[in-house]
Image (tube, rainbow, N blue to C red):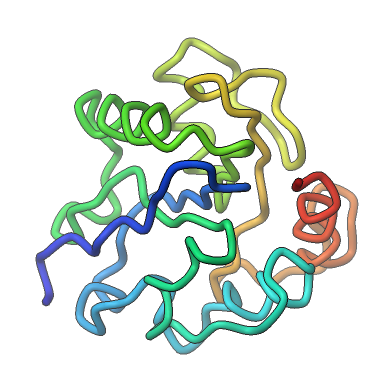
Length: 171
């Protein structure tokens, strides 16, 4: 599946859509979102309380049944590392408009900054942003990538604290 975009997992009425900056080559090769060996996405999703159980990457298509959607700004893994073009961001906004989630949660500051610049907003820090995407409230999570393991996340000692804050805001 390398070079092919992963399926978006979206549906009307979601509590939250989690948005990554780009489909990674590893995820595309494995055919599932957040399938890399060092990615803490599935652990953080469950331990924060966003999902009642821990899903595996192979179950990514089941997330909408838990009120959670998945997509990426840049869906073509052959362009990973690049910046989303305006048509990528317009496609994303249209997808959010169609499913109308309560929250859009950018998975990492890079994804949030790309979209913010597109809409003419200042790139946000972690936490709730002062703007919306197609009417849905926005939250910025620290990336769950293994490359994003450090001592502090905008003043908090662990990424899980931000993920748990989002969980507490979800309907």
